[in-house]
Image (cartoon, rainbow over the protein chains, first blue to last red):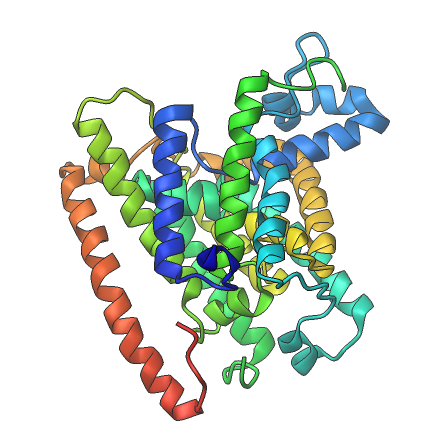
Length: 183
Length: 196
């Protein structure tokens, strides 16, 4: 029980855990770890509540959710995974007493000030760019980064190069070369 | 939108198990923290590299190993539409540096209690909806450029996957040693205490 209550585990052990988890999903579930497709399903579902005919005709939504004549499922294996990610992380944080209701991260405050609204706004914009990029690339850190990387997929390694370059350059741009002081 | 809403219960249960384990690991690994993700892009905190590198090396050994042993399961290689992979990756990096989470860690951060992650996740939904609108244009332009199908590093080079796995495992062993040295050095300079 001691380990369960530790706030942080070695990143190498966590990496091994995720690697082994991927063996299980591939070999026993015929699935690859991934997250971002579920955002397409969720967005399509929510949009469909107000404009179903549009969602049933938009080619990208049809790919995942089907047409009006042949509707596919919204809540599938990966969707379930994403919902339970919240619970898994909550349990992990709860067991070590590290649940924290962070509104504005300290590093952000030091660079952009303590405004909660400003942080929420840019978090929203960041999320938008993030998911648009993920869908353009065909996956995110899980689907491309981990699952694709370990399968040696060319698409995934190209994605990771893009992600590293984009992230490093943009972080430098907004935080300055000195990295915003001590983390 | 509610016809066929749920897939079969067995797959939902397996997905739930996977999500629980994955969320638990991400939180314990510290990647549900904004500072850890942004710190990686600022090259000050290498937690993300350590976790991903180890996961990829361990995963590759297992998947290709099981495959070589004759266990039957399918691979899930994504289309290499290289311009889309690259541009999407660049945008993804920008969004990740701004938000401080990726999709999986952002969702997990909500579980840890992060409030700004909720706005990030809402933004992700908007981004997904936006991409659905842009898709026909993307398909006609970006996605057709340098499209080499479901290629792997082994198929494009004609080399055995074993070579790449040896490199990955070698990197997974060597990089931690090199990073340890680097972190001790920067810690001496900045006077920070190391957590790992």
